[in-house]
Figure 1: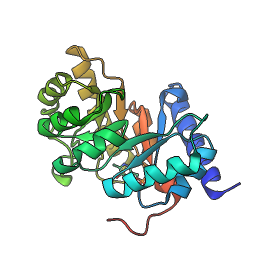
Figure 2: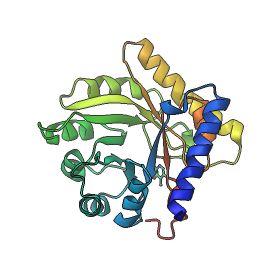
Figure 3: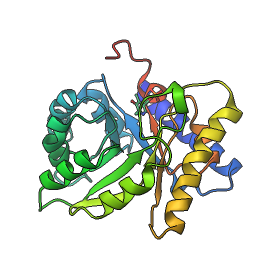
Length: 237
Ligand SMILES: *Cc1c(COP(=O)(O)O)cnc(C)c1O
């Protein structure tokens, strides 16, 4: 068995274990394999193990890798890959994101959402959108400040060719499991409030290699895992 195959098995075991502890069906938790910095061959290896959803942060790297991975997998009769854009979005990159990806996890501005909507090709399914919220407060700069999600949800929902699916967060790393859970709980409560206000949000993207158990305990429906599948990255940009 390859390392990637063994790692994927171990991550699925962790997800199943956490789901059991949370009394949730493991099938309600999707695994996005974060392949940033790793070559298309790694994507193809994971694909051979049944992995279908992949996450990328850097657009230029992703566009090249998506083309290469498609060629390696030659998707003729196999189900296709699903690509999730999980990095910060620059407004001048929205067209390529709208054309190449199935999900965008880190929408924080109405302007960016409008550009994604305008660039989403009509022949593709609506682009799945998550609003990124900063649940760690001062310690992290990524995501909108809590409280801003309501107005942004309203704006995104009004745009064509986008489907608002839920919320995403990247809390600052901490070994304190109780603190991890409080931050993830905060995102879940925001999602619940939006749903009480009439939305039908089915997605909470939260939890990575080091904190996926806490995220699953608090209701994660997508965990984004890189290191635990592909190994430590030595060239983080
Ligand atoms: C890199 C990255 C991940 C994966 O992190 P690991 O700790 O390697 O599992 C998840 N989400 C986002 C947004 C990332 O940038």
